[in-house]
Image 1 (tube, rainbow, N blue to C red):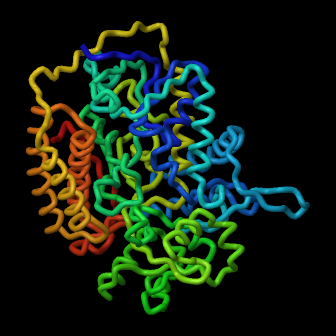
Image 2 (spheres, helix red, strand yellow; image 1 turned 120 degrees about the vertical axis):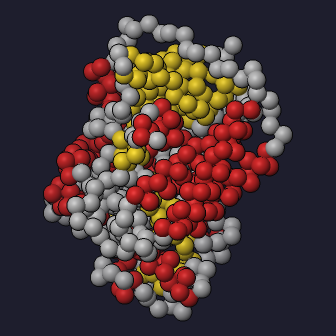
Length: 531
């Protein structure tokens, strides 16, 4: 018999969204936080730039809203954008109360004020940051606070396998999840009155990504299999500037570098962004990423270069200490020479459809953070709105959950996980091969620039992979690679089918066959009931 755990609230994911929600709920509920790896290992930890909010008296919520709408290329839901911007400052003040030390500078009266930086798409300086390691500061602070709560249990090194639904009056209700204990390699289950997906995005579906290994689209795939709609999966943001070096792994170079004056150059040293957009290096990320991709292909170059060496060495070391140390360790002195860069898959703008309280199509199931589609980002996410979205919707979900949680309900016995007819796989090499094949053709066919023929090829390859993986899943015991591959292939299919439906180029979706915008464009919505 598999082991069953019980709790009021199950939060699948341990980044900014999941941990913020846990802390908001811990006074009123028993919470389990499921972390696929160590609790610090997630996209939040690696976020460098910062969090957007109106703190400057010369700035305004209206301006933040307008900048976000422009970046979203006509597909943002304006009421959601305003809801997020209006709640931004309060959420940042809550983070500060938790102990996050954002950078400060002397004000006009000698009193300290927060140092605000500016990033692509923003018309004002409104980015609070902790040097160039904001995500790390947020994650470590939240983890410290989590460990102080007796009503929060953290399960590290656990994969969520699938959600468990129960039919209630012709409506599906989530009652928990099957989980895989990576320590014991056993399947267990958790019964929860409320379940929240906070699993992050799906950028690992691409060969080159700035994301950590855990970003494998688990929550999106699980929600789809459970019966939830997804939206705007074709809009995958490629960060323009990831460090290009054989020993760098997936090291991101924050947008704030360009916000502070860094210039993109060709290998011969010439600048090129003014030729693509009047905003030059401060254009939205999709424009900058396509420009770099275009120049690399035109010149047959392995990379372009990001140059901030015209700034003083003291300025660079003070504002970008993490990047300075990283590049220095690789033999690059960014105070004297440009940094080699390439675009990489960075952020999933679409996801599981939710309302302003984080509720999905299934009763008692919520989704917050990058896993969710809120309507905030539209066709392109503006820099530093992502961690903000995590905080705002975690707080909104916490309010709804607290008001609707019925702790007097009895826990029930979940259906037993049956693996009596499965065996251990002796073909792990096949899983590895499928894994690499998927990520390579997604990069080649469904990347920064797309065509209808490339998308058709990608869909055909995905369908073949799905048959192989389904066969594996039925016959062999689960493993980390098999679970992630199963989810990535599902998400890849959703991305491809969404991209095939959009007969225009808008925001992050750029296709050579439909280069123009169409009038009255709307979000792409896929429903599992229609498949």
